[in-house]
Image 1 (cartoon, rainbow, N blue to C red):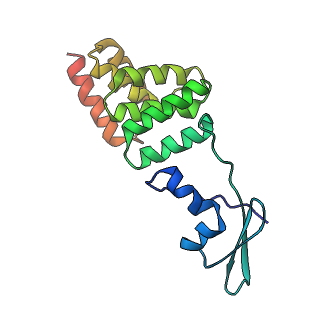
Image 2 (cartoon, rainbow, N blue to C red):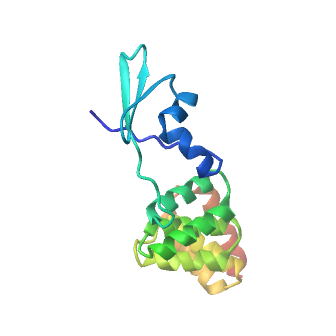
Length: 185
């Protein structure tokens, strides 16, 4: 039987939500009325008079210092538009696990959304030790340097971005061309 992983985004404190998604009593309050707990760490959800039964095993509980889970949490904060909170969580994750490329990528993006070009550049630098550049990272490099008025670096990265973008990012490509017209005067 295949495993199904549910990712549910909930904008509430973990201590309030965890009992609702990890216990038979909690799940019976919002997911299914027929919920049993046949063994420790296992919960069964019954549907259609138990003609269909889903067996759930408790997900790994994230320790406060689990970088992978922190990155997943920060990515959810980004989806919710909570960029400042995401920056703090990505920062914590990358301090715990400096080789976490997803953490550095997320930190660069979230920091760019709240106009923190120095943090963005640091995150991009650390990410570049782990992964190759792509159009998105070139654009973040360019806009961060541009914000800091570092003209030569901004121009170079806008050009890298345009070479890598290939028409896939029309709005950003237009922005890059406009900035290059001004910066190369």
